[in-house]
Length: 222
Image (cartoon, rainbow, N blue to C red; front, side, top):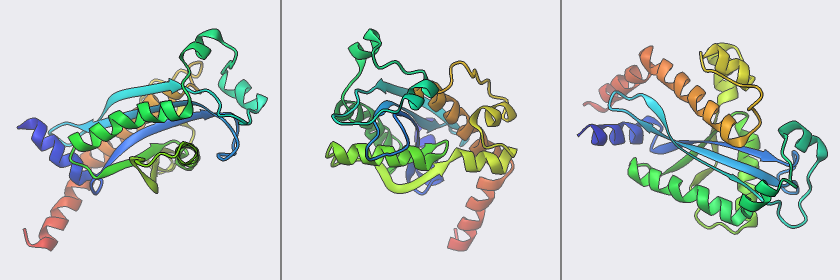
């Protein structure tokens, strides 16, 4: 029964969209020409009280697509070593990585009674642009994400905490953040997921979501 309640709450909370937190590490700022080097996604779930929670993390190293540009400044910033033998051993092609990421997202959409995923990211437009470009390059026909809508935690954190930098926003939310581990897609995605959940749950605890639900029910005559 509790799982059914949580499923119904999630389906209602974001207009049938399932929020999925995504972070990408790239070879530059040009989504069309620069390489996608790492991808990570955290699916979210909800408890019977309507609290949003991180569910599962999926993360992959990616081989630059043929002809891709990789700026040395981007590698210096992320600390990614393309010549690392361990990385070369586990890195997937873009098509393989997207397939591995999208598969559990589709399952989570179905499990929560949602219609599709909506991307959550810190400066979400950047990640969304690269994700869409990669999906187009690979000819993905069933991209589970909304093509242009997203939730930006930088904007939300600016509203809630007065901070737009991920590390500072996490600190304001009481979330531990290790700057030495930052700029790994997995680490940044997991901290972003915690931050997004903290902000959504804080709004709920202040009465925001429940109040909106009650007003909607009154308007519909329920």
